[in-house]
Length: 308
Image 1 (cartoon, rainbow, N blue to C red):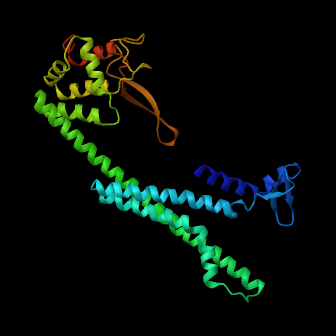
Image 2: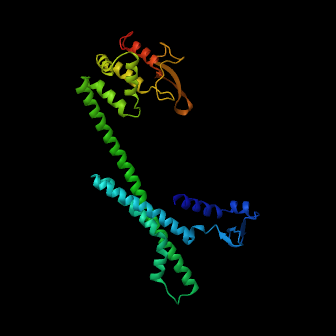
Image 3: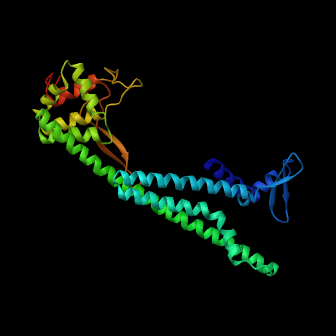
């Protein structure tokens, strides 16, 4: 329904543009009324279909009502699920979004209701035209209010979900850190770094460290216990390198690459754009792209063959 609704709105909008009208006016499939600036599609039975007023047809309004009505129903059902899960804030936002969709679904009905309540059988043609315009304006007002409520609800919901996700992430990291401290006896700083890498934007630290341990015939806990004995800044740098390691197309880490070198550890200088078009030279860490390169990092940070 959404595809049909928005496609119809695009077609109607394009049909009103003079550049489109001039482009197709000589095409046998179309007919242009230059007096009213209306573009028609010529039908096989000899009839014509008004493309410029497509969105004002009864069937299109029914399609729009169905589209927003389905959205309102989905929002109300989601709000009910939120209540059952004890998430009152999410339920409130979903209910507000449902109300906005419901108003948009009712928008096509408003002109008819308005006309029935304010109609005057003895009105002049000018008065009837004014009444029709007022009825259409009432429908647009209801739709605008519904869209406004829906927009506020969506923005509020996205903000709430962002805050909720951040809180859940922090709780996850705290629990992970506590588990590593209590289960493996890791220092707080090492455990915090590991949990941050596992729960942050890069989720590969755990997998990369496990792959590194397996490549050096160690159990994962043995690797962590060795890291636990090293200086915090060096352990953190090694964990960060592991977290940034890319995987290959098969989802595994490269054992070795032609670019591997003991010299590609630490930092190197690169030129980055600065203010007013001036480039700045900054030092950035080399990235370990294979398990062998990660071994070179371990040798550089901790000493030859000390970790692995």
